[in-house]
Length: 75
Image 1: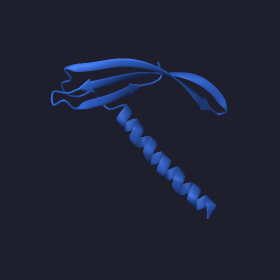
Image 2: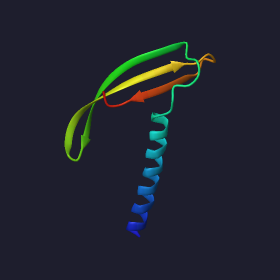
Image 3: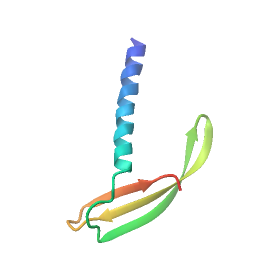
Image 4: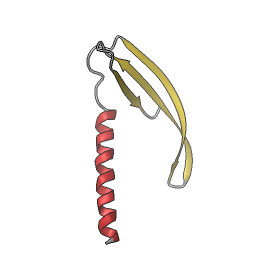
């Protein structure tokens, strides 16, 4: 029972990570008259080790007033 649940959780996480990767590498399409750039530092734990990670964040406002967020990592 537990291994079936773990497999389902693993598959769900994989689906979410794939969606995030597609969003992350999506092109900056269309006109964006306003683009705001910012950077952020975060502490992340990988394999029991804590590291600083930097992210470049761009938020574009299109001609209709809708915002699109774009993140590039790492710097």
